[in-house]
Structure formats: C-alpha cells, structure tokens
Length: 65
Image (cartoon, rainbow, N blue to C red; front, side, top):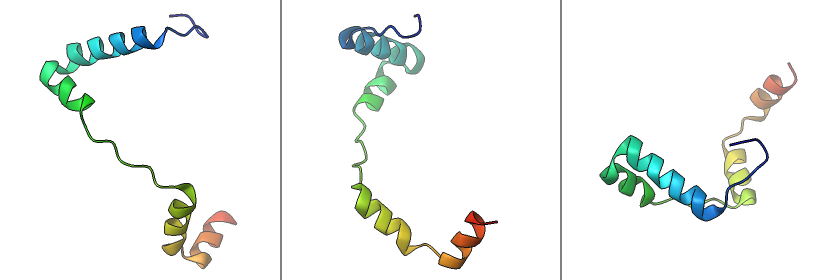
C-alpha cells in the first residue's frame, strides 16, 4: 500500500480480521476482538490523580537538572 492512500473502513476491517485469524487462530482472534476495553479517564481527573503521587522537590530536580 502506498503512503497517503487509505483503504475504506470495510476493507480495513476485513484485512485486519483475516490477519488476526491467520496469526492467532480463530479462537484467539475472536477472544481478542471481544476483550473489554479499559474506559478512558477524563483528562482533568487523570491529571489530578497523577498530582496526588507527585513529589514536588523530586519532580523539579528531575526537570531542572
């Protein structure tokens, strides 16, 4: 496939499923496709959770070496 040219979504899905089935087998491909996806955390909440564990002095030392 040349750079900058996209295939339509139906063809992309068909090819991806064929590759998964070929490489993993039908059972594992089906299992992969049905895996529960992790829910994304809203960005502000994710940032606040990151800040909870942040140690200011250590953080600044790493950033401003």
